Amino acid sequence: MALGVGALVGFAMRIGNGGKAYSILAAFLALFGCILGNYFSLIAFASADQHVGFFTMMHDADPAKVMSAIWEDLMSTSVLFYAIAAYEAYRFSAVRPSPTPSQIPPAPTAGAVQTDRVDPQAPR
Image (tube, rainbow, N blue to C red; front, side, top):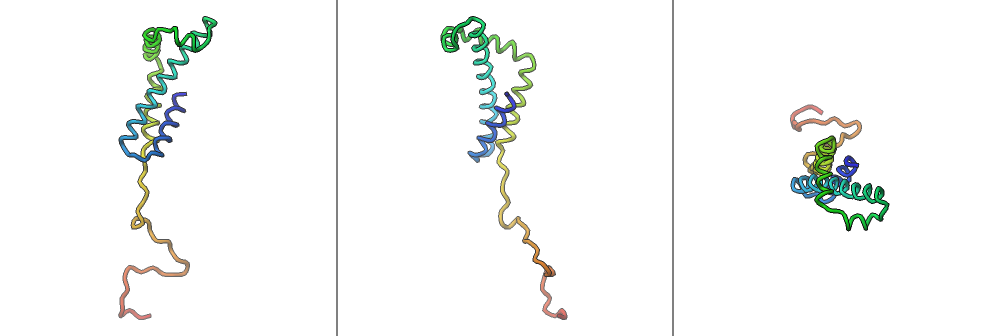
């Protein structure tokens, strides 16, 4: 899920076309989205375990205990997925500059010989 979050946030921020600031914001939003997803999934697991509704558990849950469980999980492989999500969002949101018309080489015409300069004294 972290890979998908990173890619989606990166492509969404690319639409903004804002440069480096948008890339940094995309990495932060992907990281925040992953942590928020883990928070909600822990609430969902606890509500299923206690046989209560999701919103009831979300209202009754102690946020400090949930964040403590996320912090314990962070020291496992979650940190790797968080880093990959942030990196993907940063890279996918980077705007590639389009070439200016002067940088695009002219298309060759069929049967014509291209010369660098015209020599008026050259035989025809």
